[in-house]
Image 1 (cartoon, rainbow, N blue to C red):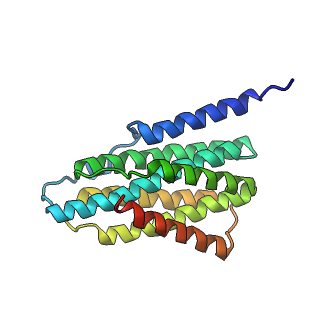
Image 2: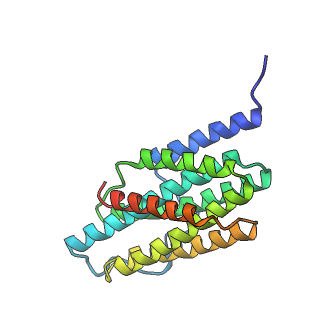
Image 3: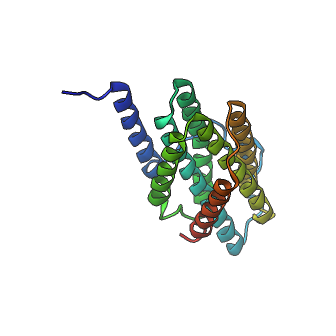
Length: 216
């Protein structure tokens, strides 16, 4: 008769709990809301069109954070060393701030989160498991490449957001700074640069997600 290792079982339970919290619970940030921190507000009302545009862009950013939670939870679950597992858990915790900020801003703009969040989460979780199975260096490289692509994506949103939407800009700017740090940390821990075909496939998948999440 065999028994399951308690640590692994606990990790599976914790991963399931985080999935439910990501998809069904209201996230809470450990850091101050960037618009409040920077002293910006909606003093200049946005037009109906600007609010719809900003809400759509922030919905895309929220989906990105749902995917980040799934990726890092999966990579933590399959990590080969306790130290690396802890690093992915910390990364997921830090990304929870982004999840909370984007969700709050979407609500302020009168928008909604993506209807396909369970699909985004499930797909990203599988990808995270695959990345982790390739080894720690590849898993860290995947993390670094993901963060670099998110950084470029956020920079494009800074150019696309309505000029008057200082609150959304404050959130995206802080998220961008955090993603740069996450990528640097992953490379510092020994992450490999991924082959070009893998990076291209990641960019293609991200483009499909962003185009779809903008409307759904």
